[in-house]
Length: 233
Image (cartoon, rainbow, N blue to C red; front, top):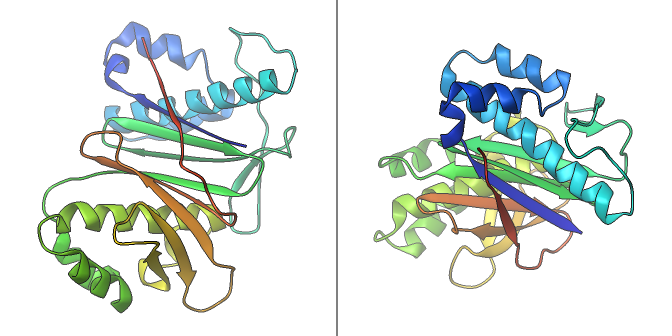
């Protein structure tokens, strides 16, 4: 089972709404929020923490469990070898979080999962030459110039979702993997680790949010992903 949620930070600009949602997250997340250096980062961090609550409450409910609708779950986090977070009392659930621009996203699964959301900012196509593997640069060339900037962010999102899947983060390096689409576009395909240290993974991309890409990565093949937008306010 795979559940994906996204939410917009816009309503958190109102102070009363911000403090209301601070009461909806666990203590560890509150500490993370206050560690952020600016208001936008605090809103994104808070929203990511709220999506953990939404995802886990829905997961528990679908499994026939009972939980208090209003009180936040008292979540206890543990961390794997590479620092990837897990929930101590819900070992059967794998989760991944991401935020970019005004959106936060969360993925919840009974298998290892990674998610990344990327805002398509100004022209950054030149960064591919500095950070991507040669095979990825060739892929961008094959996809053509018309949507080169958007495709750059799609590939970036896939690579970061893989980093979150493995738990290694940016230590791995963007050029350590190769994105191999299934078909002509970038909707789905495979991520190949060049050094062979970890198994290949599969990805799916959604462009449901205008000017954003969401990539989900798993060691298991993925069907089309369904994304639920959570209203804040």
